[in-house]
Image (tube, rainbow, N blue to C red; front, side, top):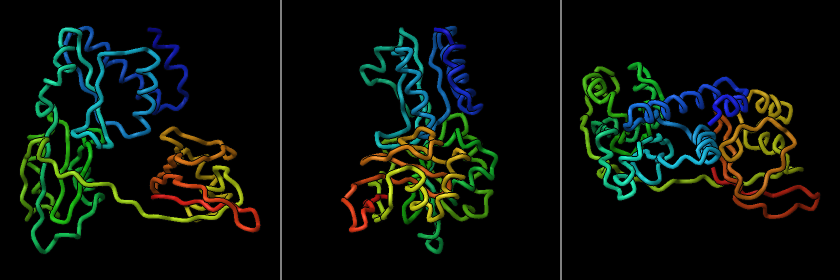
Length: 267
């Protein structure tokens, strides 16, 4: 494995650091002949590391985030001697992840969204990479975190004013309240399927501003960073714009009388 050749493919410092840290975990697992865990990755980071795993044909790696449909996942790297445990699904994931259930008092129910919960954890000094999915519901939220921060989090959550009157429990992974994803249907009309035109419509801004957003590396197509404004977008592409949200190009319906494209979007 020539790490330098792989690392040289990544010019973005954050991406290069991401890959470098993954290599460090691989080395530690091989050297100590034991399980190594990464932090949680977002979908863009997952795409990069999935490409690395595929390129190097790595087998002793498993993606996991608490439940099948989760968005944020970590990589579990294990030695050959433990391979059967994972292949037979006998590994106890509750030993590496913790789930906090925050139940809000009646007067605060329905008030808190994802940002409120995440903001509270960040305020406690917890790095985002230690936090998995946050599943919100009317009465509170289930928050998946790495086991290593369980004691700190349990001791300090109630110090936050927003959670001071809430009930805090540590539950099993199997008890997580799972929700179906909800989508907002949007229809846009654009003169072209170029990325800058699509971004302008989705971000509700001018095409010049959309190009600026692209140059700021805030746009991802199918979870890969994209700066080329002329890239052609097609059905089922997933466009993520940092600060604006995630959009699925659900259906390109056809054209208006003027030849513009009518596109159904799911946000």
